[in-house]
Length: 323
Image 1 (cartoon, one colour):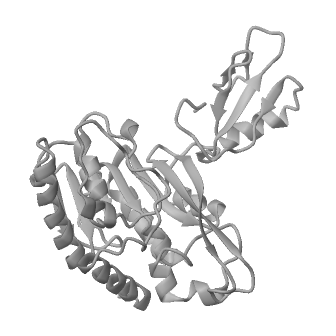
Image 2 (cartoon, rainbow, N blue to C red; image 1 turned 90 degrees about the horizontal axis):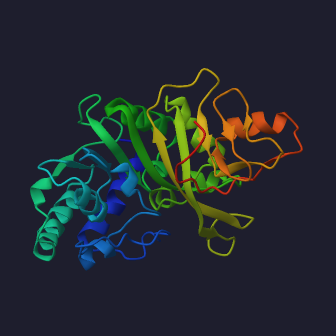
């Protein structure tokens, strides 16, 4: 095992044995769902920077894989939508974290009459070599884990997620990102990498790694302020701004002209005709915004029409798009 991965394992071994409320700072409100009660210990062990639980991904009784179980909160949330034996597979490389989750699920059973611990299949395993069959998972997820990896390991982890997903399956990710240059001293600080800080990549690089793994559609669902690394407290000469991002990558066939990446852009037609049809599958009705991927936004902008407006990226996309 690489030394940085060993450091990471030790950090989360301690966090499993003694919940560390300040270890991460989740930027997404915890889902409040009818009949769902989350034990306080799970909230205290919510070691993520966002959320990977999106109800619209979780229809039709999906089989879910969650890598890096933490205290089990997102596993419990996923099982709310997949109430079947082994419907949610929870994977972690830290045995102590798996044991803590198992204890927490017993408490969750006491608070939720619909929940059974056998809904969740806990497995010890590595994100770089998933103990999961090919094309067996509907929704795979990870929260604040992949930014810990070096670029070469991240490529392997993404390829593994792609392997286990069914066709049209979804990979939901939440990670810190940073569009500033991260100093090498911080990049190589194993403790900071384990704490989900100095491994943060620029968003464009993060998305390219995902699409290079074969995912034909990528949705940016949220981008929020996360942390500051400042010269007073960290080995950096400038203040570094880190954001958290929530992304869904879909195992769609790769389009011949490249992936569809939705960053929250919209096109609005305000001309005099009944509608505008670009003859490529995109029909714009008058003054009705249509969410468009960045590729389509550029193609429409290149037409240089005065009656089509293309918005800037909002980095929030919630379906209803062009492709």
